View 1: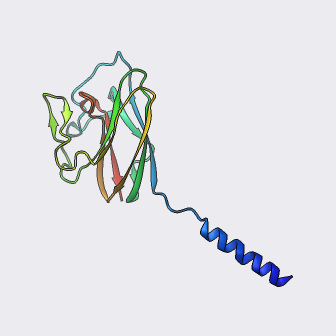
View 2 (view 1 turned 90 degrees about the vertical axis):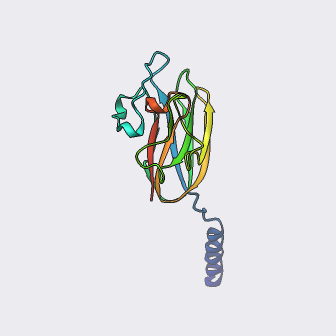
View 3 (view 1 turned 90 degrees about the horizontal axis):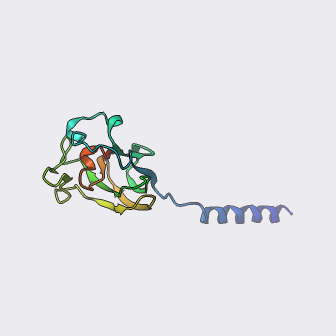
Length: 161
């Protein structure tokens, strides 16, 4: 009987070791929001303006602002009722205080170094999508690059440690 119990315990231990979950990285829930179709767009909510984003007519809300380095999955939802949004991930290593901005187009220059490490392309209202990236320690900017959205406050910062 002792031998049967010992071999059963060993089998359970071996199976639990084989089926143990593999570390899957970090998941960040992302809410792409705006104040609605009647909102007034602004152009002074860029990173370099050091804005009070609580007054922005649109934005990006993330479930956590600091994550460990490694695999990071962004699960985004466009919670707008009628406006298309996207989410672009950029490293601020080369642009810590100011993001390259094309004023005539009212968009971030995604072709500048590190300004587009990956993106969730335009989402219609209510749509969801995800993006997984391997991120190293540093500061990152998540922003919407639909014309006028970044300058209207549709961005947030992420720290990877």
